[in-house]
Image 1 (cartoon, one colour):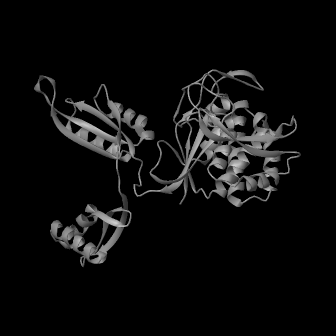
Image 2 (cartoon, rainbow, N blue to C red):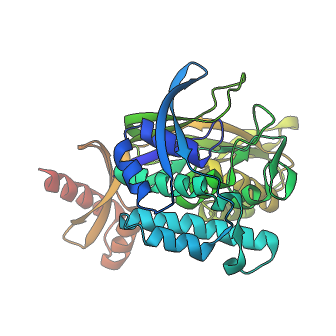
Image 3 (cartoon, helix red, strand yellow):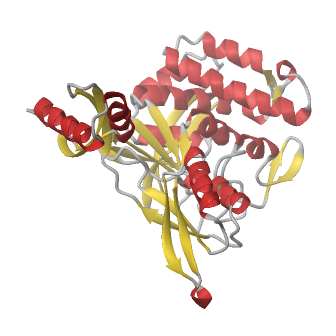
Length: 390
């Protein structure tokens, strides 16, 4: 599997993404050829080398005559379907435009079939979206991850007048995704860029563990003194650590909650996606015995699990801080013990087995069914696994 990480520290737009993918190695001649198959009259593309903040990058230039058309979704879909692109590039391009259409329809309270694609229906936006999907296909990308999105601030001019950043379409597209604002008071994430990222990315968060193979930088139009106006893409293969290395630790000290409630809260947190939940005895002020409830959470689950802590416990405050987590790749192996089959969880570093452990629930079930001490089932499963490895 090949993964692509979109590092949107200066936002994302369609032309920045296509420039970054070309910079990372997508065949620029083939890109131009396939974009030409869209049949857009007198339209061409070129890729220029440039610099932003002293970093070499690639800038996409779309060469096209003035295009006053306001295309409907059905018109754009016909253009894409008639181009004869690779099936996945076609499917992804259609999905991005369908998402844009549904957002615009909701904003203007009209059926999606009646939506006029104003700026995003222009030739350059069609080139950006389709070109990005074609580039991903040329690079063999199977999965896309995205950083939190820097939206920018200030105002932006569009067909409906001057509006605050994020523009209505961008705000709707990024709903539920992690966003922030840093840098100059300009629009950094455009509707086109937001549509591509939110449609194609499987998750938003830190850089996933990978063996890095290529990096590309796509240049935005403007130069900023605060930071290089670039979109960075990182391409590679997943590494042995199967889970994100960045987590959040949520903690609360409690001295006025019963053990029954503590056990219930732990169950609820694990069901809601917590990576781990622990209870540690502590002595609090006035020598009161209590406990510290600690939750390990994925970054995108932090707010939801914090809300659950406030709802289900008596705490008045939560400590939250980021931490690094190193995780070996894990898999399941079934072994035959002579008393029944048991799953064994195996942790590997590459091809080497580092740790293994029989699944407790499987061993517990067999111990009850066979009337055999639990420790004997666990020992039998360990021996069976070691014998299978020889």
